[in-house]
Length: 135
Image 1 (cartoon, rainbow, N blue to C red):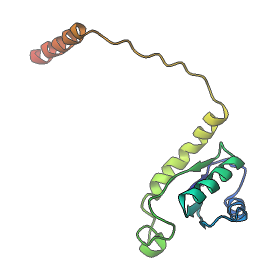
Image 2 (cartoon, rainbow, N blue to C red; image 1 turned 45 degrees about the vertical axis):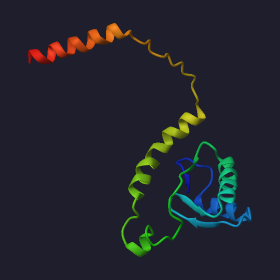
Image 3 (tube, rainbow, N blue to C red; image 1 turned 180 degrees about the vertical axis):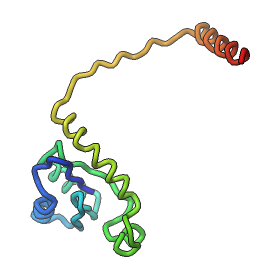
C-alpha cells in the first residue's frame, strides 16, 4: 500500500497515472490514502521505489497481508470500515511529523548508560525488598 502523506506533491490520481505508465504487471487499486499494489514482489517493489522517488518525504509504504478486493477484508463485501482502517487513520495523523523529521534531520548523540556492578545491583534489590517489607 502506498500512502500519500499530508503535503505530498502528487495526488492519488497522479500517483495512479504514474504507476500505470510504468507498465509493470501489477494490480493497482486507488484508495483514499493512495494506492494498493498487488503482483510479484519484484514488480511491486520496483513500483514502490519509483513512486517513493517522486516525493520521498511524503510518500510512505505499508505492507498488507491481503490483496486488493479480497472478500475477507474488502468493505464492499463485508460492509462498514475495513479491519485495520482505523489503525491506518491513526498512523496517517502522524505522517506530518514523520515528513518534517525526514526533511529536517538532526544529529543526536546517544550515550549508552554505564553498567552497574553485581554488588551494586544486589544492594538495590535488597533496599527495595526492605522497603516492601516495611509496608
